[in-house]
Length: 319
Ligand code: SF4
Image (cartoon, rainbow, N blue to C red; front, side, top):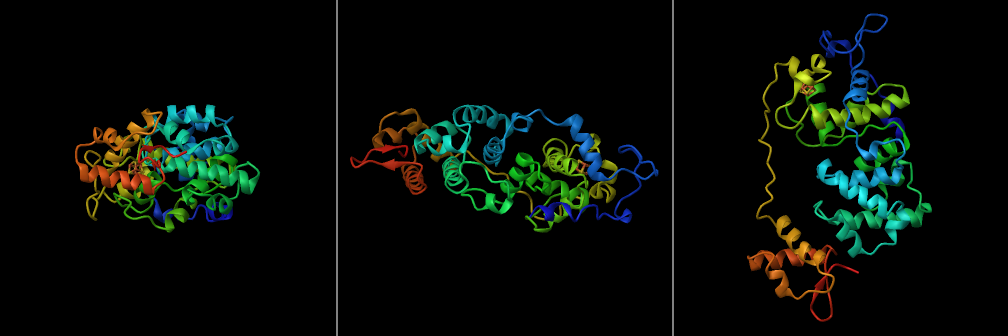
């Protein structure tokens, strides 16, 4: 799997790029530095100092951060991640926790099924790998709740194995920088090869390139209006070279939260997190007025294993 990320590098032909006018430093031969090298050098000065990027963190800490960061901003993740790592510093520690404990500790990160899946993943690491997070992408992908993105991120950032790592931000960077499109559209299998083609060949720089591409998408090549004036590869960008064409596809849907089942499920879980005893249905009524929606959401929480009902008909977090 690792080879898939690094063997197909540097396939951009010079015809793909306009002459460089202001990016990076010219090489000895006078040619422009490769885009991947420019991004690695930019990352060295522009990267955010995030705790899961520190050299002393292990693959477990990286794995927990990657699961938490899915669909959740860094600012909300950071305090919860710190608490989790202090409380459950290894997969064995988390595997020994109860579902109620992990749902409580997940707090308001949203999409709380991730907490249960993380605990299941920890148990699988203990059972299959003796408590050590595996380093091979296929082994990581075989864990509960771990998809291709997270598996590659853990292999790359947790173990230093060069991997193309494609999240939403990287897909957007690829769409603009490589393909000259304003938006990424649907996920494409070719995104992995596209980003791998830009990676430097030296393994350490290839690893830093993977996180640099993510950081560019998070800080500069952002959703909506990109901050091209601050972009280190602005003079190589196919979208800018094409005259910044508008998005041709359907408008992006902005996800609403207010009034959705997600909000109602969160309210119901808030009640159960705060209670340290099983609560009657009447106590949940105060969380949301619409009885039909409330009932639907309570049913879905029961189905998802996030709530359980006692023999007396009371509700609580699962034990
Ligand atoms: S120049 Fe603008 S659109 Fe192109 S990669 Fe940089 S930030 Fe994104």
